[in-house]
Amino acid sequence: MASLNFNDIHTKKKQEKLREMMLNITSQLVKLENKNPYLDSCPICSSNKIQFFVNAYQFDISSCNDCGLLFCNPYPTSEQIHGYYNSEMKSFENQFFKDSFEKRIDIFIPRVKLIQKYKSRGKLLDVGSAIGIFIEALHRANANFNLSCCDISKEACKELAERYPNLEVFQNDFLEMKTSAQYDVITLWDTLEHIVDSKNLLCKTYQLLKNDGIFVFSTPNTDSFEWICAADKHVQILPPGHVNLMNWKCIDILLKNNSFRVIEAFTLNASLDLSYIKKLIKNSEIDPGSIGNFLWEEVFDPDFEKILEEYLIKKKKAGNIVVIAQKIPNQ
Image (cartoon, rainbow, N blue to C red; front, side):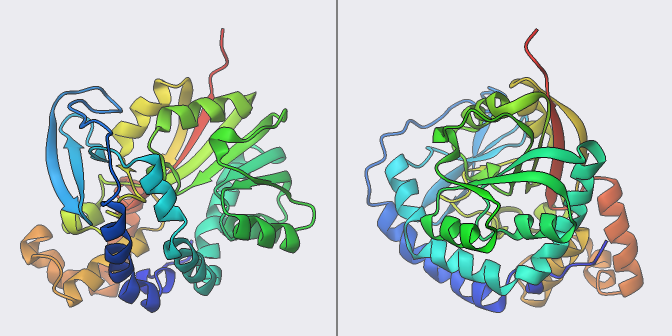
């Protein structure tokens, strides 16, 4: 598996502009009335052991002391979310995806191989395709799937339809997508963290899967080396875009409660974690005590870095988790 570098995936322009743009956009969004209730129990495990975690971009984030979920509390309104995704933020995001397109392909080629381990052909629906990095990875791997994709962005769907004439494109919110098709595979890459109602998302996924279908997704993993180090300063804390940040325990509960069983789970691309931590160290953005003085120095040794990368993958402690789950048909 190719080693990936944080600065290749998250371009210099993105890193320089992200905070400035987020502050500008969210300063307007928080002026919109939010009547959503403050939650005193966890939306995933129902525990009442909820506490304040951090205020980011004027949105409060709570944490669950039982399952570890980090979530906006209260959740943003649909008006705030719509405002966020129809701001200049979406064009900015698509541009840095384009700027890092080839590097991001290296993230998805191993994921294509994982899917092919369980399904070598059939109908595949990719949800939240954006500019189509995963679609391109499927084409480069000569994957034998009948492909469909769904994205809310009119601009993204237009580009996808032009680039891939045989691709069935749905320009829809996934929850409102209308089709009679049943799919062998549904994929959802780094989208779950954006969804307020994750239970409805899984219900829709369940409905569209064949009885032996698989659901394959990725999302940030808060039970990871990079999150232990970065904590409440982590770059993935981006409300109202990221509203639910999960770990393996949250995901397991969510899937079981919605009639899915986990086949496998991986945390790949640990090299991204290590390059992110080194960036934080170089920029003095974290306290040395958060990773220990030994790691503070040794993480720059290429030999140690390789060993640690392999360890994080083996122990599922890298910063992004890839899950393969199977639908449990109704009895």
